[in-house]
Length: 405
Image: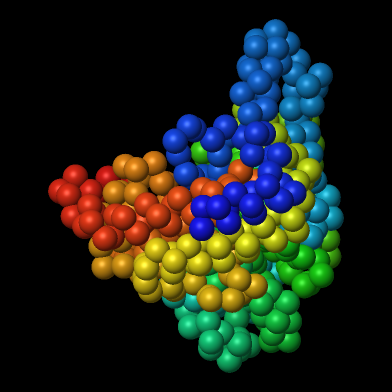
């Protein structure tokens, strides 16, 4: 399989982009779905912001370097990656905070309804934000299995909140079908794109989506804790109101009025002062992903994940696949169920093969095709086969749980 991998790498149209990322020597990185590799242009950009814009121009840089416009500018660059218009997306805060804002906005747009419908096993922060609003008496959380979501859309549902690509399994929802079903029931829809944005084609406007959120540190390469982004469909921009009425969301923040008046566009989703260093790093990653092209990235990711499955079979590995077998029905990842998944993951990491574990028994591998090679995939499969065959994962140090898994 290694010879086959090298042939595939030689014909890979994205091969040149690996050199645009810092991939540590001796590391096979299969966790780009959790934290993307560092674009090589990012340190120089951050140094420029720190030494020149902050160090020399100081507070003048809010105007001279365009700091004040960065949330909208970066949001506008993210927009075409998710099928949105530039004025519908803003880069700000975290995914969790943006979820809170948009769930609240949706509930206010449906004042005669309180139910927020989601599925059990959705990413925890999505469910926690619904629960937090429920404790305030503003929402009612309802969960339905994915095969029963449509029938759960009754006249009490204000909002359907789902993650497009499931964080554990990688399974994709049919965004268009579920959005139409929710609208037919009089409900709004909020899509979490954290495992989709920058990884696979998304068409929010084509599907008629109302709201969306996503994070900047996975496939967009913005770095740990990078700012997230939020989408509000143009038709809702005037009426939608968010609850975190901080000064940067004001129509005229530097008028310093005692009374709040929301900005007229997507800028109303801003709250506090934008994190300029984080936005600068995110902008580098977004520019690079946009240059490569999401369609090309997803096409290669599908080939990488299928090649990984072939390599596992060739090496005699028969783990329980929990991701859809059809690559068109999953995002850029593969997940397997294993009884000792955590220890297996740690044994692989010790060998330089970095994937991750999701409780209680999921071994998860991400395929970020901008910097991942077919040779990496073949070698990762070999290492996994050896870890399982030798029982290497049984060593005591691989069983000790770290704070972050």
